[in-house]
Every structure is written in structure tokens, then in C-alpha cells.
Image 1 (cartoon, rainbow, N blue to C red):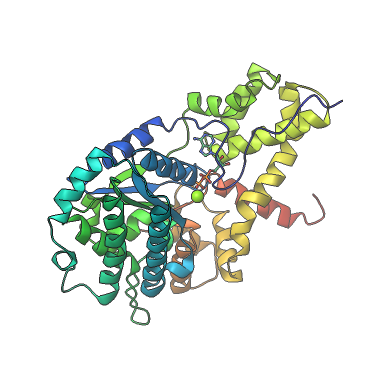
Image 2 (tube, rainbow, N blue to C red; image 1 turned 60 degrees about the horizontal axis):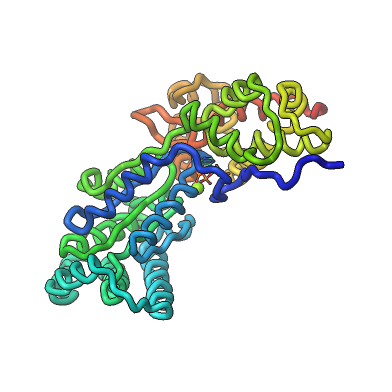
Length: 400
Ligand SMILES: Nc1ncnc2c1ncn2[C@@H]1O[C@H](COP(=O)(O)OP(=O)(O)O)[C@@H](O)[C@H]1O
Ligand SMILES: [Mg+2]
């Protein structure tokens, strides 16, 4: 007879956990930023490594904004949106969608704060005021799309409109002669232009650490424009909560040494916590036991790492070209952290110039990010260890 029911852990991307641990401070900051708008423009930059819990937190931001009577739209950007036309089209259709939804669900009761703001902003007297005459046509069409939602929001008594963009590191300004595409600048100019008129519009950009550098290169003033939230791995207490709380009411007993062991292995990374928990649960169920023991962990560990490599890391490798993969695997043999390009060069027959090109492409692919001149880090936690496991498997093709 199976003693355990449904698995309470949720390893995945953008899947809310049964218990969200340790993000109270980040949520408080977000709420404070929204509450101070529009007098202080509400823009948040949310960055962190893969699997640290950014998307889930972004979902919390969206919910929190709605609870505060803001209209909100959240979307995950894709590489194809790194283009002025594609991005402005996307924002236009998002705006139209929000407007349509809002108009269907008209609320009778107006919110006092929203109405006050509406009066103030309407006094600004129309679109002409805030469309920068020097802005490109595309920027002003983004401004117009956002202004339309803000107007609908205010007319319905909402506090404003917040746009939440996930995977925003895919946006970057490309100054190469061939492309000359500045989607990120376009977006920022549109938002900043609108905000300068007092319009209650908020922008949350969420993504890998690369996002910060992309923003800096796009517009020099962005550093002051955004409240930066760097999402780190959970501290030991929160990690323990994240691991144990989903077990509440399940009847599972947990050996205290096991907790210590798991907490050490997962290094505070939410994705790992969910994965370790999920696999332990499955293993316990297979054995028809309700006890999480160190011994259970020992025997489950190979399965945990196989799943981790398959679900979390290998997909990244698969999207790269052979030459990019080759350089990335070479980096698995280099010193880390951080990764020194100079060190990489000594380990590959590729020319200096080619190594630089490949490093640039790995950054664009979101696999590594630049830390300082000549040094880089992986965007996924424990990626170096994964590369080493991968290399070892390659050198022993007949095993596992
Ligand atoms: N604060 C948290 N506490 C517990 N689990 C979390 C927390 N944040 C995220 N998770 C879990 O971690 C995994 C990765 O979350 P996600 O938001 O997709 O990460 P990211 O967007 O940073 O790659 C999911 O399985 C999610 O359920
Ligand atoms: Mg994410």
C-alpha cells in the first residue's frame, strides 16, 4: 500500500512552489516602489541566476500589483522580440489585450486614490505633451500603446498600469552596422517619456544578470531609473523552510541529518530544493516508506543528478552550435570561479579572435555573463560541476 500521496514539490520553470520561502523583503520593496508612483517612477530590475526563483517572484509581483488595484500584464520575452518592430508589436497587442479585458470587467466602485491620480494626470492634457518629437516613430508607438492602457486604467479607477517582462535579457541594443537595432532603448525611452508626464506606468524587467549590463549599454541614465533587486539563493533558514514546509500534513518524518545534507547540496537554490524534494518523495513512495532518511538520499542521489542534468542543464547545451559547445566544454576544465578568457585561450587551439566571438555568443545565448573585463560567470548555479560531470561521461562512453 502506498503511504504517500501526491508529490508536493514543484521542480520546473515558472511553477509556483507549495511554499514560497524567503522573498518577503523583495516583495516589500516592490510594493513600496509601486506605492511611491507616479511621483517617483516605478521601475524595477529583477536579476538572478537560472533557477533562483525570478519568474515565480515576478508572478507574485503581478499578483501584488493587482491587489493594489493596478492593471498588470506579464509576459515572457523570446529572442525574436529583440527587434524594434517585434517588440513594439508585442507591446501594442499586450496593451490591447489588457484594455479589452478591463473593459469587459468594468468595476462599478471607483478607487479613491486612482481617481485622484486620474485627475492629476488628465490635466497634463493629451498625448502631444509627452511624445518626444525627436523619438523615433517606433518609440512613439510604444508610448502610445502604454498611454492607451494607462488612460483606460485611470478611467476605471485603477491606480495605473504595470508591465512585467520576463527573460528580459534577450533584449539588447545592437550597434553593429549590420543590424542597428535598439529595442531596449526604445522601450526605456517610451516608458521614461510617459513617466516624465506623471503617468502611473511601471516597468519591471526580469532576467539573467546579463540584463544589468544590457541596460547600462542601452541608456546611461537607466542605472538611476531602476530599483535593482538581485535575487540570491535562499539563506539556510529559508532553504530549510522551502524543503520542509511542503511536507506539512503529509505524515513524512525527516531525519535531521538528512535536512542538513540536503541544505548543503542544494546551496540555497530553489530549483534544486524542489528537485531534491521531488525525487526523495518518489523514492520514498517506491519503497513504501514515509521516512526521509540519509540512507534514502544516498541511494537516490544518482537519480537526482541524472534528472538535474537532463532537465536543467542539457537543454542549454543542445541549443548551441558545435563550436560554442566545444568552447563551453573547454571551460569545464578551466579554473572557476570566475572564468578567465585568458585561461580559456590557453586551453583551445582556436584563435584569440574566434574565442572572443564565441564568448560573445555564449553571452547572447544566456549561458555566461560578463563579470568584469576578461572574466565571466555561468548563469546557472553549479554549471561548472555539470560540465565536469558531462566531460567525465564523455570520456567513459560505456558507463552510465
Ligand atoms: N522562494 C521559493 N521557495 C521555494 N521554491 C521556489 C522559490 N522560488 C522558486 N521556487 C521554485 O524554484 C524553481 C525555479 O523557479 P523559477 O521562478 O522558474 O526560477 P527562475 O525564473 O529564476 O529560473 C521552481 O520549481 C519553483 O517552484
Ligand atoms: Mg525564469
